[in-house]
Structures are given as C-alpha cells and as structure tokens.
Length: 93
Image 1 (cartoon, rainbow, N blue to C red):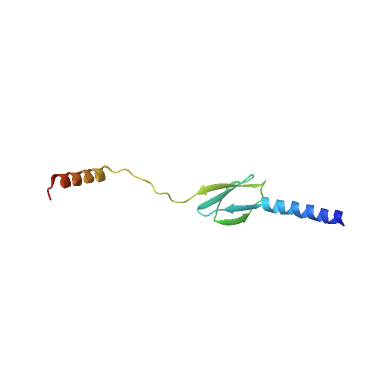
Image 2: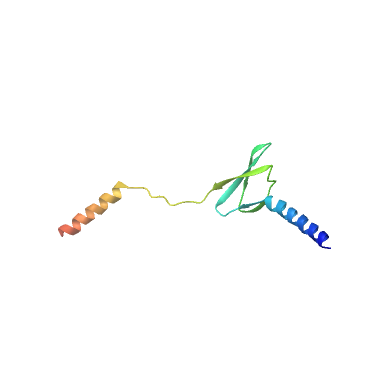
C-alpha cells in the first residue's frame, strides 16, 4: 500500500508543480505584456490577478504603472518666501 500511496503522492506533487509554474500573478499597480517565443510580443495587456500561461512558451514582461509624487523645484516660490521674511523682520505691513 505504501508504494501505491507514494506513487500517487509523487504524481500529485509533479502535477501541482507543473500547474504552479503555469500560473502568473500580476500585482496591483502593475501590468504584464506576454512575450511569445514564436510570435514575439503580444498586443494584449494583462491586468491584475492570476493568469494562466505556458512557462516555457510565454514570458511575462512586467510594467509598473503606479504614479509617484515628484518634487519640481520652483524659483518663484522661493522668492516669495524671502520677500515675506523681509517684510516681517522690518516691521512693515
């Protein structure tokens, strides 16, 4: 009995590993484009979630589409702050 159960267990492990390698997770804030070994880059954009793909045939190309805050230096803002400081130190209103 152990040999039969062992074979079933090994078979299930192999099938589970193959299925796991065929699943592709796309995280939130990311998009994937699939590179196909025979057709090249496919035009379909893959949204968030878990998707099926053939691991040796398809390769995901991951893009980060999240927005990031950027600091843009502004010289006019700095001049305005300096002018306010001069007025407050001189006592004029």
